[in-house]
Image (cartoon, rainbow, N blue to C red; front, side, top):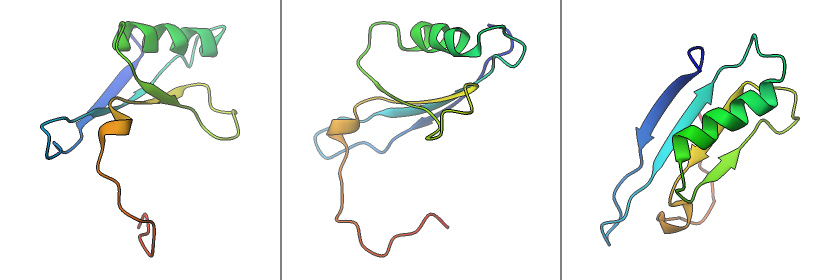
Length: 85
């Protein structure tokens, strides 16, 4: 797993003291089976903790995984005119 990189962000603490994390893992470029390789990396990172995992929508990038913990505990707002940029 020497080639796996990780970027971790703490999500804001909610009013009830709960918070979550978002982690982006990338790696496995030289692996024979990058999907299994990254599955193992995620398994090592999350251990036995509940999490949500997201992969690229078209499934053509097996080298990146996004992991979010406590997704159901976050404060959500109605979707309106918010934009990514």
